[in-house]
Amino acid sequence: MEGITGYTYRNAHKSHFIGIDRYYTPFLVANQNLKLKNKERNDIAPMHNQDIHIIPQILSNKAGECLWAIKECHQLGYDEVNINLGCPSPTVVTKGKGAGMLKDLDQLDMFLDELFTLLHLDIKVSIKTRIGVEDDSQAERLISIFNKYPISELIIHPRVQKDFYKKPVHLDTFEKMLKKSKHPVTYNGNILDEEDYHQFIERFPEVERIMLGRGMISNPAFARELLTHESLTKEEFLSFHHDLLSGYQERIGGDKNVLFKMKELWYYFETLFYVDKKSLKAVRKAKTCKDYKEAVEQLVSSCAINNELHKDMHFR
Ligand SMILES: Cc1cc2nc3c(=O)[nH]c(=O)nc-3n(C[C@H](O)[C@H](O)[C@H](O)COP(=O)(O)O)c2cc1C
Image (cartoon, rainbow, N blue to C red; front, top):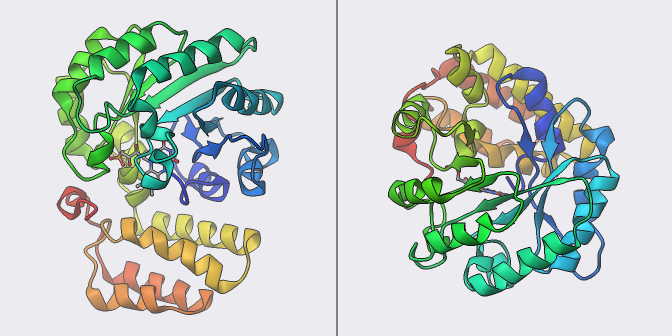
């Protein structure tokens, strides 16, 4: 997740929690400069991702540029990359990238044709997709297109671009796509607590892989809880939180920038606790890392963990 699950986050997460098979990087932008930003290069550098199974994700709408990024990843030792056809952000979509690639399916078909014709590397290419731009009327055609290419995995987030992250997921459309896809399908979208997960696997027992997003940022032990029913404890949360804070302090330095990163997470963490307004305000208002850490400790000691109600908060 762009801005959240960079390598500092992934390392802290991996060292505290089990249950994740693979972490996808926030998207790397492949454009005509054929140059990754330093931040992107650092994010996929093997030295920053030791003992973590990561899959670099690429955002691109030109086969040549995408191919270049795939080669860069291959040279770094990656055996799989993921292509993003899902980002709904207007700045991305207006450039015809991310979910913007779903506007013109003939063009998408040509992009994939050129990409797979020119790709002569031993590397898997998976795709993460939404199901349309305005509506889902082209969803089955989309699958027919994907079926033509040797895609290693298809991750479907069954919302259209216009839905952003809030509208309900279109599970009926997902069902049709699942039936039609010849590729292994991974589901993504609104699995925010155990109940969501159980409802989903009851309806789709054949789906073996789930990609977690906001539910896992909110509750970092979510994947483990699904596997083992072992709930997050306050001590674990604090230990993870403090490691993440130290990671950012080492990497970015400067209280202001570090606090910006940490406070962003409270948009998600606040759904993990029965927060009281005063404690949350103290976390949000802290100006130094020292005050921030104290405010977080105070909040965690005074507020119970809420294991059930993530959905009600539902990421306004
Ligand atoms: C802040 C933010 C950043 C995101 N960045 C990415 C990204 O870089 N690549 C990607 O494939 N999806 C990205 N997503 C989408 C999530 O991966 C996921 O598809 C979406 O949140 C729906 O799943 P969820 O309901 O489990 O969160 C982002 C979502 C959010 C809210």
